[in-house]
Amino acid sequence: MTIGKLEFEQAYIKLRKSEGRLYSDAEVALLPEVAKGHTHFKEWKVRKDSLMRLLNYLSRSGNVKNILEIGCGNGWLCNRLAQSGFDVTGLDINQTELEQAKRVFPEINFFYKDIFNSRSEEKFDVVLFAASLQYFRNVNEVILLSMKEFLNENGCVIIADTKFYTQTECLKAEKRSKLYFEENNSEMSEYYFHHSIDGLNQFEVKVLKPENTFVKLISGFKNPFNIYIVKLKPQFIESNLQL
Image (tube, rainbow, N blue to C red; front, top):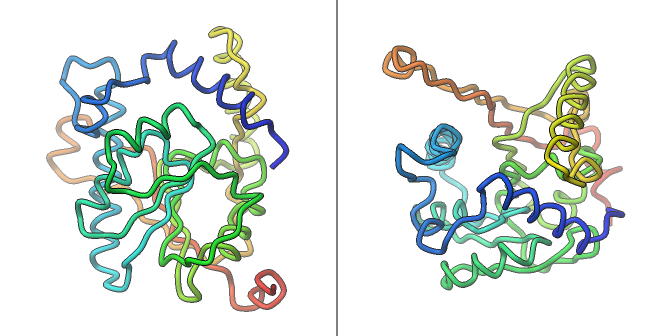
């Protein structure tokens, strides 16, 4: 990854502040629960739904003990996973929110690390990207690196709350985001990327679609995000994961 860590953090925090997405310690401790009148109530309703789907999958898999979340931010998701009995570690290059995560959830291990310049003796059953993969330019590269450096032999990468597009949709999404960043006087357009579903071609991917129950349908609730369970196809293992 060639982006400057400090420049990214400054642009990211500036935008988060303008959007009202920097929370107090007390608020972070309760996430994804927020008051109904909260500016981002609908967004956190989606995050909570994704969390429930993720926990349901992890509990059914039966062989997940430790999880690494890359791009953990303020640590709210690490906290919820830890509360469900998993051994969780969080990584980020966003020092501002990472320090908050350490402060609010002192029982969890959080590290300031750029994964492109990191090595890990500990291996994990799951490497999780939750609403963070869009900050990496090359989805294929970052998934392969995560598998090689952090993942157990039988583990998987899980991607949640990130949208994948067709090539045509990518172009439209890029234009929308560029306009949004320009309107908000933000430099984040340099650090925000839209990924095509084609970027997952060399992986075995299980897609967990949102569950549209009757109650959700009548309430008008819609979660726009799939959850992707990603493993390397057998024919690519030796060439891509060799030391």
